[in-house]
Amino acid sequence: MKQKYIKSVLQIFSILILFAACNQETYNLTGFKKKNVQIKSITKTDSFLTVTILKNFWSNSGSFDFFKKDTAKPFSIQKISGINPTDSSVTFYINSRNLNNFQHIDSFNLVIKLLDEKNDIFIDSIITNNPFFIPPFTFKSLGGLLGYWPLTNNFNDYSGNLNHGKTNGNLIFSQIPGTNLTGTQFDGNSNISIPNSKTLNPSEYTISAFILPSTISDKDNLSVPISKRDWSGWGGGIEFMIYTIDKQNFGTRIIWESSGQGVYLSNVTKPFGTPTLMVITHDLNYIKIYINGNLTDSTPSGGPINGNVNEVSIGRRGTGGNHAFTGYMRDVAVWDHALTASEIQSIYQLYK
Image (cartoon, rainbow, N blue to C red; front, side, top):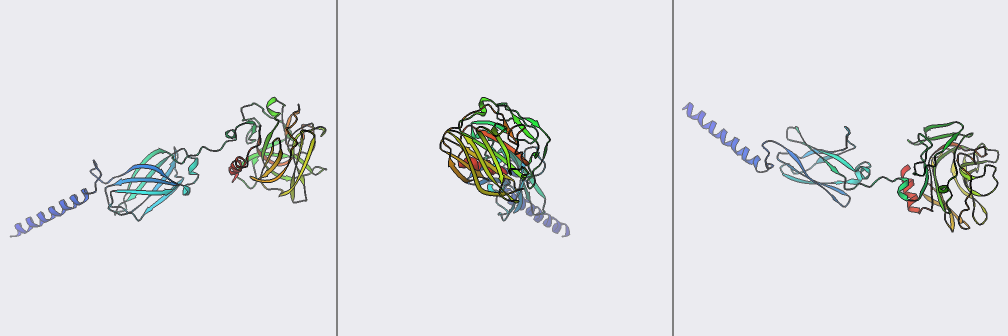
C-alpha cells in the first residue's frame, strides 16, 4: 500500500513538472533551451528610438544601457518597468531627447538587462548605427572659411589655408573662467600676428570670436581682439574693437574702409568677465553685430571692403600697436561672406 502511494505521488509530481515545462514552452524563443533575451530590432519613429525585444521567461523590469563605442560606462540608462511579465515580444519607445548628446553619437552599443522572478539578470547587446545622428557642427561646414584659429593648444590656422600665427609676448593656454573650455589668455601686452595673404582680403566677411575681456587698461579705453589695419591707426581696413562704457561693462566698436572709412559704436553692453560670442558680418549693404547668437546692431556698410597688405593681428592693433586685449579668447574665425542668422546661431550652440 505504501509503495503504491509513493508511486502515485511520483506520477503526480512528474505530471506537474511536465505541465510547467509545457507552460513555459508556450513563450519560448525558437532555438533556446534556457532563459534568454534578445534584441530583435532598433528603428526610428519620429523622436523615439523603437526597440523590440524577444524573451522566454517571466520578467517585468530591467533597463536599457547605452554605451559609446569602446567605453565601459554608459552615457544613459533607461529603466524598464510595467511590462507584461509573460509577453514573449515587447516593443519599447525611448525618447531620443532624453539621451545625453545622443544626436552627436554616430553609433552606440545598446545593452538590455532583464530581471526574472528571482532577480537574476539576463543580458543581450547590439552595436548599431544611430538613426538620429547629426554630424557635429564644424566651422568648415559653413563654407567659405578663410582662417580658423582655435587658440586651444597652438596658434595654427585650421581652415586649410595655412594662415598660421606667430606669437609676440606672453600667451598662456588656460581654462576660460565660467566655462569648461580652454583658450588663450592675453596679458594686455601680447598678440598673435598672421601675415597678409590673398585669402585674408575678402570684399565681404564674417568675423567670429569667443572672448572674455577681463578689463581695459588702455589710456584710450579701447581694446582690439582682431584687427587688419596699420598698427599706427592710420588708414582703413577691418577692426573689431571693444571699449569701456563704465567700470563694469564694455561695448563694441567696428572700423572699416569701403567707399570711405566707417566707424560704428554699439551701445549694447556686456559685463567684463563674461564669456561672450562676438560675430561681425559685412556684406555689400550692411554691417551687423551679433552677441551670443542674437542680432544687436545693424548699420549701412557702404559697399565692399577695400583690401590692404597689413597683417591680421589677434590681441591688439598690429604688432607694436596699442589697444592691447586683456582676457581670454578662442575660436577666432573669418569667412568670405556674411553668415546668416541661423548659421550664427549654430556657432553659438557650441558654447551652450
